[in-house]
Image (cartoon, rainbow, N blue to C red):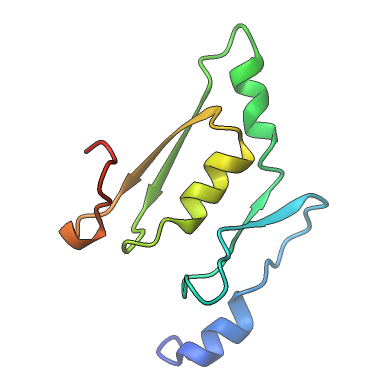
Length: 101
């Protein structure tokens, strides 16, 4: 496979290739974020765990943001901040002022 050819990879992998009636693209800020949207299947389902009295809520871990937080911010907004979201990126340049370390 042409894994080193970025245009081939984007053409064949940028769109979701699974069946999800409630797929939502989060984090796309045209002109500002070259990373683009990430697709999440039914993200609102995560909120139900926060509303359930017997559940501890939802916890989301994300790895490697490369200093681009549009997806993470979009997910938090979509979920009305109902989930605890942690982003791990070893690059010091990826940290964002005001966020907890």
